[in-house]
Amino acid sequence: MNWNWNETTIDFPFSFQNLKNLLNTVCRKENRFSQYELIKWCDNLTMAFEEDEAGEFNEFDEIAFGIARDIECQWDLFLVNTYSLKELQNLDLSKVKLPKNWFIEWLEQLNEK
Image 1 (tube, rainbow, N blue to C red):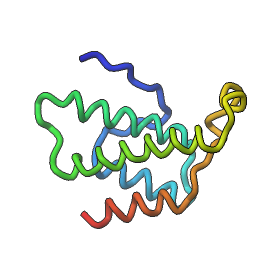
Image 2 (cartoon, rainbow, N blue to C red):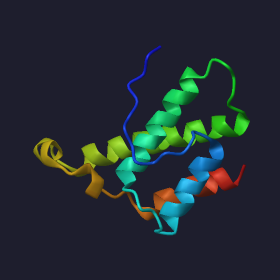
Image 3 (cartoon, one colour):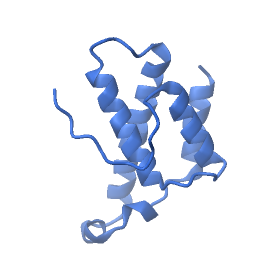
Image 4 (cartoon, rainbow, N blue to C red):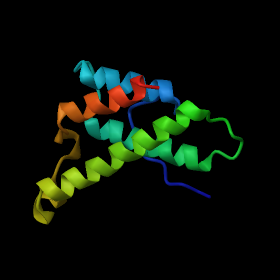
């Protein structure tokens, strides 16, 4: 299958550990990337996982896949529940911020594993 990969400034391989590192960075407010960049990276992670025919991902990466998918879905829900269609058409997505406690919860889920 041929996926349309998102261009993102985050150039980390797709893995459980890298998702954990990125969430840590956001929770500590040390990220030099927008949350939108993280969302695009998470979307790419889920596509990489679905495309993984060689079985390179392990059980922890599978957990990361589920959390990355949740991050993507919550982003989409947040946008449609927060902004009108007209606002969305002109919105600079790099300025949108999800609640910090959501990132803390996702990080806690990863830390439990």
